[in-house]
Each structure stands twice: as C-alpha cells, then as structure tokens.
Length: 272
Image (cartoon, rainbow, N blue to C red; front, top):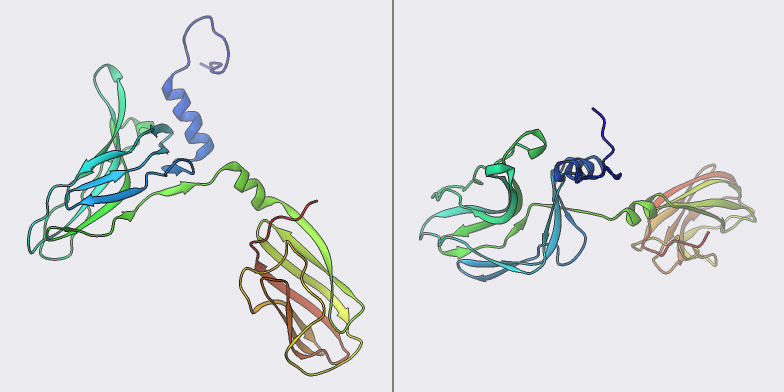
C-alpha cells in the first residue's frame, strides 16, 4: 500500500527504514564517507592505539555521524608474524529492532606468510541483514609494529561538484599564423579545441613562443600540453602552459588545416 512519507498523517509514521531507503536511492547502494569534518582521518598513537577523527558516512542508506574523535585499541602483534586488522563501522539491529552503529577493530589471523583481511559482515540491512560492516581502514602489523593504515572508503563529493562538472563554457581562440579563430569549449574541467583554419604564412618552429595566449579559464594543468594539433597539408602543434603561454612546433605551411585538442584545466570556471 502506498504511503506519503513526507506528509502530515496525524500520527508518528515516518521510519528510519524509509529514510535509509531514500538515502540509498539518491546516493547509491555503495558506502561513502561524506566530504565534511575530518573524514574519519586516522592517527597512529602507539603500537596498539589509533585515533579516528570526526566525520559523517552513509552505509547502505544509514547515516552515521561521529562528532568527536575516538580512540580504538589494536591488539598487539606477535614477533615474527604479520596480520591485517580492519577498522569498520558496524551496523547492528538488536532486540526489539533497535539499531546502532559503532567503530570496531576486526582482528585478522596472524601468519608468517602473506596476511589476508578478516571476513566481514556483508549482508545489507536493506536486504534484511542484522549486522553489516563498512570497512574504513586496513591496519597492517609486522611483528609488534603497526604499519601505515590504508584507507578503504570512497569520499562522496557534494552535488555542487557534480554541477560544476556539467557546466559548459565556450569562447574562440585566434590561431597563430592565421586570421581565423577556432572554438574553445570547456565542460567541467575538460577543455576541447576544434575547428579548421587557413594559415596565411609558413615558417619552421622549434618550440617557438607564440604571441597568442590561452585565455584564463582554459589553461592546462601541466606545461607542454598539446592544446591544438593541426593536420591536413601541414604538421603544426601548439603546446599550452599553465600560465597561458603557447609554444609552437612544426610548420603551418600556408595550408588549410583541421584542428583538435583535449586537456584538463584547474582554472576557475569562466563567467557565463
């Protein structure tokens, strides 16, 4: 039977299960740490203690909040043996369907060979599971020494980042050795150069600096990036720098030529 969840029913009726279903439907069925607070940053304090920082996570639609750092004890290792422990966020449904979540260290099996991760509870509460583990870190132990923790979670980027990744801007760029301009388009942090031109003169270039520069908002992340490769009756390449400088290689040969180029930029998005 259909039920209006976000509506007044004259009685308490919205459930945590419904909220979890909505979260899972919007955010997906994977487990994520959210991009706020300390994102559960880990600090190794001693040979048997780590501290997990503040953070927010969503596991199978369940939202878990850690408002203050928490110390966790790692069982001491053994000389001559290796072990992998896992730090997890454990969801549990107990008696009278009371649900809870806490951080837990799951101990692995010591071995003189290559250690493996311990088994976790993997049946989703969305599928009726009463215990579920979201792995956060692998803690490798070599003898009595704790190694560098390995993060096992994905950070879910906010919707504003998704919006930025879909934003599109366009401009034109005047081509060296030509009176023509070609289209320069940016979608998110990816830039595209494309079009065709008629070069008005020729000249052999060996990494010669052009007078023309790439506009702000479209400059490549790293130097020596091919931003315009011309083909046809010529071989002529323009390389871009992070400051907008363009370096030329080859001869435009007074020819008609097509152009293509794709690169990443870290520039702020240009205004519309």
